[in-house]
Length: 195
Image 1 (tube, one colour):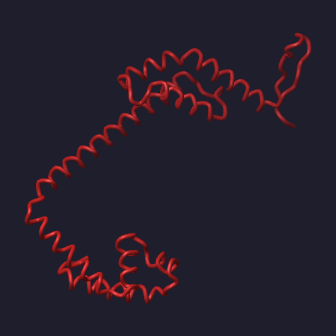
Image 2 (cartoon, rainbow, N blue to C red):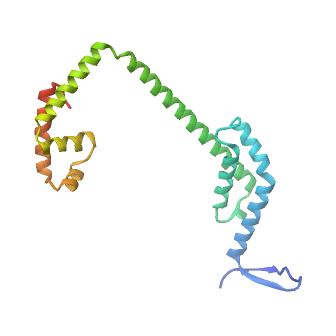
Image 3 (cartoon, rainbow, N blue to C red):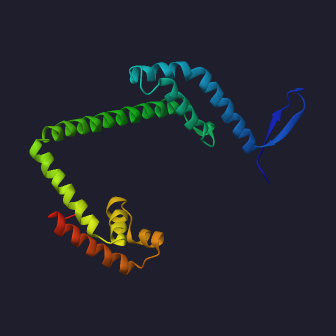
């Protein structure tokens, strides 16, 4: 037998309607969520605004994300303190976002610093050596057969595995391995460096 709850009917005080307990729980959760949003939205947004110092992230977005996470829960009525729970969600979302921003800023700073260092290494001699290397590799590529050139491009430039190359071309794995090894040996000899 299903659990049911008896609720008074809206039309008169004496009539009652019977609903499954699951529906009643969902209705209670929905009412609780609406009341919680109405009562706490502004206060929570102001708290998040202070935490993130005006943003980013946008305090309104954080509040919406917290209430969305709360709405996904099966039964809010089982929470001891739903207000504390939604506040904790919002604070965690804020901290995660701030942490992500800090990591992103650090990564970009490292990349910019790396670019500045590599720019300092661009002497005329280094550029000339690089151009000569590219010319030797190009000459080596021109000496390869069409099939070997395709294999070098698919394997080394496009990053395809032997299985992906086999699927694309229909060539056997043994042929791919043999042809690619021959091609790389030619390029190593012509360029004077290992690829």
